[in-house]
Image (tube, rainbow, N blue to C red; front, side, top):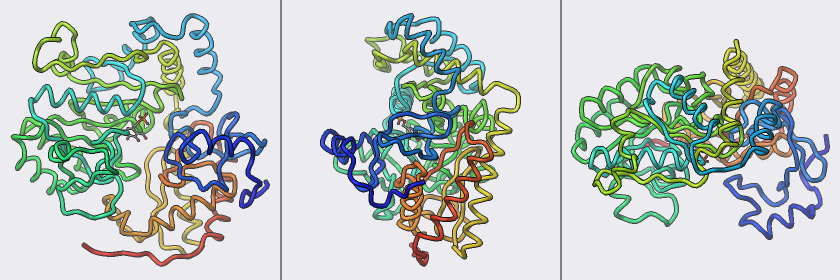
Length: 441
Ligand SMILES: Cc1ncc(COP(=O)(O)O)c(C=O)c1O
């Protein structure tokens, strides 16, 4: 394995910095010296344009749950591509996929398809607003629901504003939009319930990631949200873009036993192809029916590539694979083994850190526990987390140094996990020790 610390800037990387802002399409935030251009992937490995091999611990930001170039997905996609790539109309694969999801997802009487998780959560929020005739949305600090204004509000803790004040990310949000958003701390049922009760007349919905980034809900927290929303006529939206078909076949709804009014899916469902789904109770979903076009509570959701038959074919292949006996037992055991291994490495190195996560997800937080909310995470040392991620990247572990969230997949077998833990130990040893910067508010 050749270290990446000072490679000559490859031609492909130089081209990518010319073509894309910061050399990429997303939020990796890699320094130019570590930039790579990927060429192919197989299982849990990816290869760059210089032929270097990386152990992938982000797996297309969790969209490739079965592993890169999975034979079932490859075959389904090739067959469907040969039969037509888009009709902008219901097709046999999209119909079969919809029927399967309706059978799996407790929240969904009906659903529609779109092309990303961002669109799926956005449509849930718009539906909730139209259904309730109110504009207010309560979200949880540190949650991400896609690259729209509500999705990115209070995503990073820069100012530690008093709750429920929202903190816009960047400069694209209007004051008007800002006034409609309330922010609560995750896992603090008392505060959330009080805010729901106090603002019930303005609130259309509460949106949450049931697994808050990598932070599991405390027992009773989601049930308390469910109850408060029902009592006050506020819709509960689960953003299952990460948890759907990952924590269990029935996602967070199955794992944590709470059913929302509306749910958004994406990522794993599409097997790496663009696919989002939003669904919920029939009386809410009726708002998108085109014969209501002239009614005040109608919601326009047309999408040229929503329900794309190639994405749907990939989705069917994903559902077939995850329905195999023992799939989630194996996936969860992999996640548990890696989290435990990381804890052992950090303990042996004398680092004061927690490893959080559930299912096949893991994240290191440099501070002592317990960790209940995003603010707890930010009051640790996020910079140390990023340094560690960069040290891992230098050891040819492919990941997102900004997000610091690791995604395992069904392709991460035991040797791959052991290899990761070896590189993790080497990165921990190399990353400078930093005293946790814990402040109180
Ligand atoms: C919880 C959650 N919701 C929504 C999204 C947005 O999905 P997409 O990137 O497909 O638009 C993401 C993406 O990371 C996510 O993590």
